[in-house]
Image 1 (cartoon, rainbow, N blue to C red):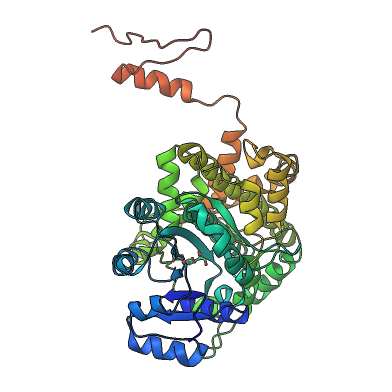
Image 2 (spheres, rainbow, N blue to C red):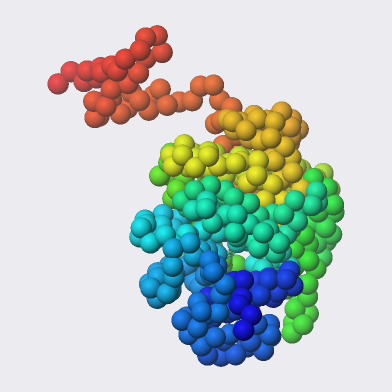
Length: 467
Ligand code: 6PG
């Protein structure tokens, strides 16, 4: 029997679609799932081999074997690895293609030490459609595995406009999953800022969903062109067949989350990185989740009752530019987080390649990413994306719109936490002097934590009270 090039464990929609994608690109796939029905469906839909046990799956692969795990992140990965381990030999490769927390990937690689099994933590983005037509893939782990898996993964990946595959090597250890986590943090911020733009158009400019759909479609033809802006235009155009109302108006205003945005925010806090827009996008979901509480509070807590009197068209254009500015700030934060992880873990992350891989296939794919890639090609050691000449110019051009929009939102009581924190990030980062001098003094006052002086080096303490 012809041996397969790849074994996929976990035959949910992602596993199945990836199998179809591999097959289309000439790779023979075997698939395995604990669930009989999933296995049968897989065999029927993909015409690939679907052996009934992990042993048979492993036996169906050519050596050194390549296995791709597409099981839910967490305990399921550990369980599959425990079962697989005795079946594999040195040189075999296991790729975890799930949204795995990077610390789990670090741990699993330690656990595999001495076995000779090569491990690849690969962030796969693009959802079900991406898996089928071409995802973005951020791979990391044992670099000895890369020459073997590279042709396979690059073959199924999306391609950027210049023809480059959106799949590359991010670095050793958990670099691939870390980059995917940061991708998701940016995804959260991108989604939230788009939602805030929508909310401002609805609450202040009083646009209807169909009108907003046209606005977003127009934006999608310009510098904001991106997958998320494009799908927003489509969503806003959709009518609910049951009620004939716009779909967005029949959907409950609470958002769930699987945790990757939270991990990115936690990682930023752990490494002392300023990533408020990413964190605020997570908090925007948490506050959306307490819907009953918000409804009760809306009856108690007062806010402004101003009617919006500005020029609607001019305001919509300001929102567009504010969205661009906020987006640049969110990406700057994401890349700062990557830079800090790079220093912490010595991964030698290829920042330009990261942006290059994100240009197509993934959820945050956007025209802007080519400019980010170029910025990091110009200066691989760029201290902050905001300091790149192109993005400094974009911000010079758009920060006023962000201010105007944030001010209007504040005046009218419309919550736009991601826009606000993006502006605060921009203004903090460009401030030569911040009020932390007073903060140092406060810490020294109550805790004798000492402070530093502007006029000479060293640590100083003042006796602030007489007693
Ligand atoms: C992707 C996405 C995907 C993620 C979903 C849901 O890159 O394809 O990031 O991996 O699982 O978007 O994430 P939340 O449930 O946290 O919103």
